[in-house]
Length: 203
Image (cartoon, rainbow, N blue to C red; front, top):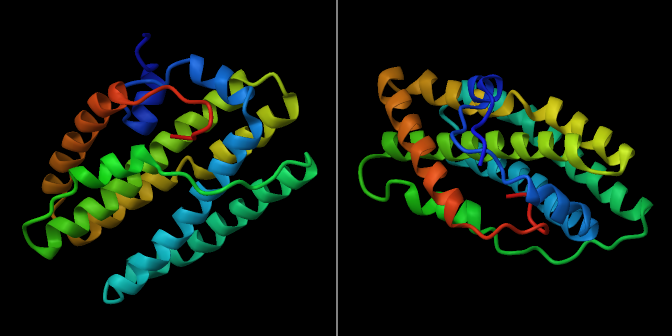
C-alpha cells in the first residue's frame, strides 16, 4: 500500500492511508455509506455537547465547541437531505468498530488531566480520519455531484482535528500532549490494519 503523501501527512498526521478499494465499495453502497455518515455527524455533535457538560469550567473549550455542535448538526441535516433526495432511507445506527477501538486505547486510570487529553485526542483522530475519507470520496466516486458533495465536507472539516489538539494544549503541557498524540497516531496505524475493508462505513 502506498504511503500517505507528504502533504496529507503534514496536514492530518495520519500514518496510513485508506485502502483505495474502500472508495469503490462505498460507491456501490450509497445508502449505507450515507446512513453511516449521517450518524457520524450526529455523534460528533452529541460528543461535543457531552464535553461541554462534562468540562464547563474550561471556558475556551466551551466557547470553541459550541459553534461546532451547530456545524456538525447542520452536516447531519445535509446528509439526511441527500438521502431523501435520492429516495434512500436512513437506516439503523451501526456499531462503530473504529471508534470503539479508539476508546479502548483511552487511559482508564490516572487523573482527570490524562482523561481530558485522551478525550480531546480521540476526537482529533476521528476528525482527521474522517477528513481523509472525505478526500478519498471526493476524488474516487464516479458520481460527480457526490464528489463535490464530499469535497465540501472535506474542506469544512479539515481544521477540526487541530482544534481538539489545540484545546488539549490550552489546558495541558504541550510536550505531554504531543507525546501522547504520537502514541495515538502509532496506535491508529496498527489498528486500521486489523479492520475489515467495508463500504458501508465511513471509518
